[in-house]
Every structure is written in C-alpha cells, then in structure tokens.
Image (cartoon, rainbow, N blue to C red; front, side, top):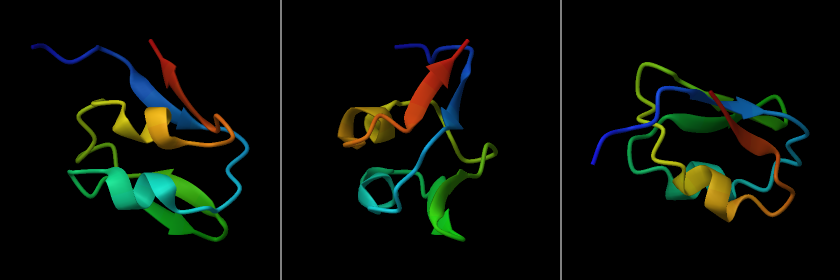
Length: 61
C-alpha cells in the first residue's frame, strides 16, 4: 500500500494526547498544549486523524 502524498495539519488541538499515544512512528508529541508533528517521522498513516475526538488533525494534499 502506498502512502498519500500530503501531510497532516494540526488545527484546534485540545491537548487530549490520544494522537501521541496511537502514532506507531513517534511522529506526534504534545508541546505547549497542542499536538506537533515531526514530518521526518510521519508516514501519513492517518491513525492520528481517526482517533482525534475534536477533528483537530486533518489531511492536506
């Protein structure tokens, strides 16, 4: 399966930490009250998007 050619953006994070806990690549961390993404580690698997309760993580192509 190939990965999408976009990226994940963070908009309106409420600091719940669910994305940080689900990312299998360690690409997400909570810093200063919001999710931050290390794009060198992110494979755009979109697991973080599926678990975000406030839809703060969005795929951008």
